[in-house]
Image 1 (tube, helix red, strand yellow):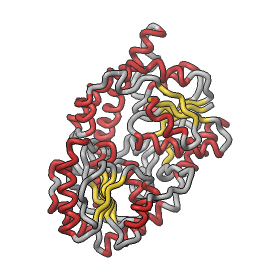
Image 2 (image 1 turned 90 degrees about the horizontal axis):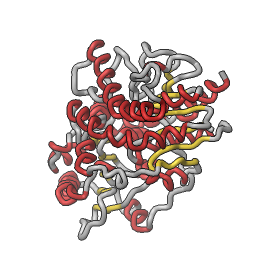
Image 3 (image 1 turned 90 degrees about the vertical axis):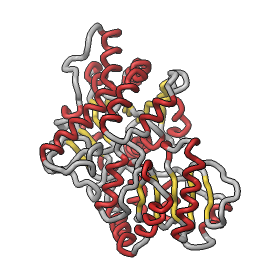
Image 4 (image 1 turned 30 degrees about the vertical axis):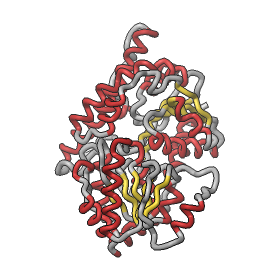
Length: 415
């Protein structure tokens, strides 16, 4: 059995589902470990799940603290948010450790470093699987500083030290607490494990397209990046009659949705802004994930959650918060992007969209107005931006990151 330790929101789990799907194709028994809220979601893809019995409610997680973490818009605020969240990791560390027992291999998200130390103690290999580039390099800036500072070799290295430090801060106390309680002291060589994956038996794998951020030439040869890890949907999505009729009744609409960073108290302000922007730009629109609305104009429809892989190919442009999964789905679909970053690495993806010529300049949520959104819609619907997005989508289609990284993992076991 291979166990994948993961944490975060629904979007954070999707790349790991894709990796698990490819490992299953290669004949491996594989399961994903995470909070029990995600059980039905993971199992709907035919992947086994090891549920952590705790959830945000039983852990008494402060909703204000969660919101602060989702809106941390600079490295200092991110650091504070990670520091506040670390105590919840301590509460569930024993369950994550139990998930590692009896496995032949542990794969872990960079926020779940317990996987590395558990594997060391159990005498089995571990693999770091990251949803974004996170290993030190002089060649590009990390996702917490990209677009915020002028890149230099030294600044780039420092930015990765900051990124790794934040991730380590969020998980180190849970490792330390469990080890002291159960084993009488901290693990051997206790410290950030991210740069230790340097041989064929302990490689690291990364979900990122080389057409978006090229694999740095100064990485160790056992750090593997072959493209994004995209989930294979188990069934063909069937839209509601209302959505189908809307898509067929006029020009392609603009998709607008902000995923898990959207909060209900923003609904009235954001919806008015979105409606005004669509009317100013003269476009039809789909508002996703904000609930139901009364008396929407005929040029706009509101929908609930929907597979991006199905919808994004049917819209003129995608406007979203800049989560790595949503951004990659927009890239894959070959449509222009408008990114409204709320926090964390979303700012990096917003800047990368613009730098690649496939979308508009970033508009941080705190600076969003209907005029700026209307201008951004008009900007991305220029022929040049549309063509650039199509080319990027075609290039990404030549990669299969989940399949190739799964092969690396299986090969490491053979060695």
